[in-house]
Image (cartoon, rainbow, N blue to C red; front, top):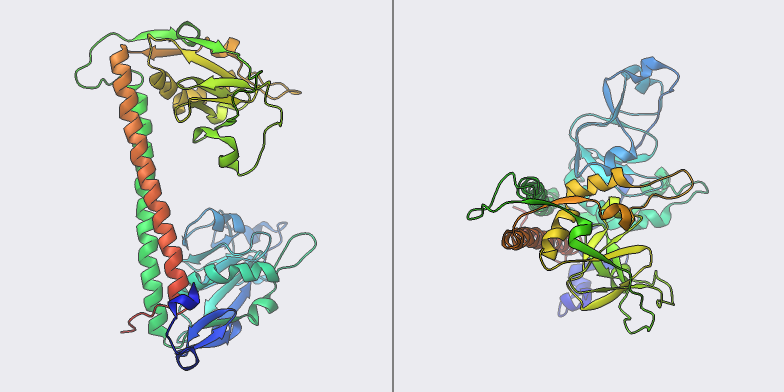
Length: 417
């Protein structure tokens, strides 16, 4: 693919090769320690409380994994005395804090002076040689090499020495580095905005569910009476087995996606070779993982005409006086998922479960069936909107990944001015 992009280009005159990549001659190969100071972290003694006063942010790997590109605060902080009495060092703003043991590669840029524990190798870029924002993105391409260089019996860790002598290829012109970083930062901002939009839409959906699925707020044009119904009065359990093996589609019930084709979803067989004792589920029927429903593992079969599920699942069918999609919507809602947790019949020796005899006594509020259908469709459209934004988010991330491959190797050059 790379050579196709360079087809017709005189590589010997304009490009050079490094680590199976081809780079412009206007770029140069350097060791990391030639363009950045590599700083290890440290931990003050936990026995001296004076070392742990709330003064200087002290990052641990969990602080990094819970943050995005930038980090401005940490869960724990140390005193200046604690820093002086340990191997911790104060990192200036815009240092790159990279996890260097166990999970190698996660990183953040600090927006305030900060220290780290010994699970880091941080980078302070040398001015006029390496732009900190550019190097933040470049690490995203070379962290696989860092992982390969890691060693250790208890946990994998990459040493300061191995990082120091690792060679990178970067633009000689600092402005070109900054321009590349600026372009990639624009994609990051777009991704961040899309993530915030998705989160906001999910919150809005949850808020509307609490209002509309309880009858506190009605949709325009509806004023019929709502009735409290037990699940057992509006639905019937199905215990039919796949004894004749006529159905071969094995389904799994997932926390977020409901019923899915098990083999396609997990990429491997996680079910028994003998599915003759599995329960059958038909289009429109609802089923839940008896031992995992408190996680939200409940689904309705819509994509296929029929399938089979584990004998550990509970399957039921809603009667014709109710809309099955509405009943499923209510039972899948965050309010009811929380309710299931209180119903789980857990014990010391056996995992909790929510069996039909208990589940059928759950009460839901049901409006007239026409209102049920409109509500079910309303929230289905809301979910489709969220799914569309999630697809767009995935596309943005793929575009950014492609841009990184092009810009950080010089296949596509930027205007340096």
